[in-house]
Image 1 (cartoon, rainbow, N blue to C red):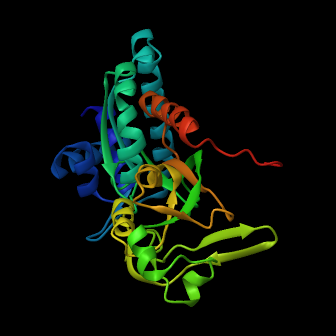
Image 2: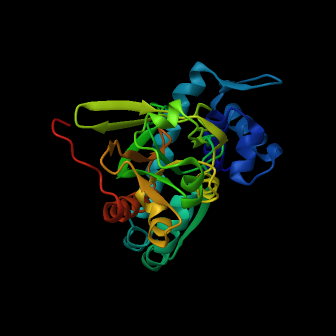
Length: 308
């Protein structure tokens, strides 16, 4: 038995709650993972996991051992990356998930510079607005807009995305130009709805002008859960959009979208990079986080608020 492999296998089973999921993330067979954990239990002479037909739960001894295993695995990673060559050139596979518009318009165009600096990092980029199980899917980090709902995740606030309200000229020709945001709720006007995967509800947008403030939900004929589909629906004239500035810029310059309510202020959308708690932050993840912070600081820096 390779004790290091056995500890890795045990840690993944604890994190995923399943031998099958652990095997998939480790690119091993379920039989191999099961054997490694069984050999580890035999060596330690304790039961680390409770197995049922539906779920795997960690025992009290297993929970205590898991905490120590994490420190051992972290120490090994630190030892490898502390070598001059490894420290200067982090390597390995990095799994990241982020919204598709952010990937398409900002991150992917900048990646040649990242790979030139870190040529030995293999980046597996998932682009979606769905809820990602960071631990279960063995994803190193996710980038998400809006308020974080899972407070157990470690996270970094990396940007504040300015928002604006827009509509296609074709839509405005048919529906008329709304004079007040309230018209989006009380008249024939329509928005394109966006429902967040994490709670399935349409978004509400806070708007302010002087002493006047309101939250606009609007009425929609179409609601989507993907950023690219949301933009496409607006361009097709299906309703009014709330868009981050970086998504609207090209369409606004070309005249495909017209800005509305420019005398109103909208709360910017915070952008977070989140990763699993209790996991060691590897060298490759650390440099990616730093790179993302620097990249977003160019496009939409975090707004420094007084008192916090």
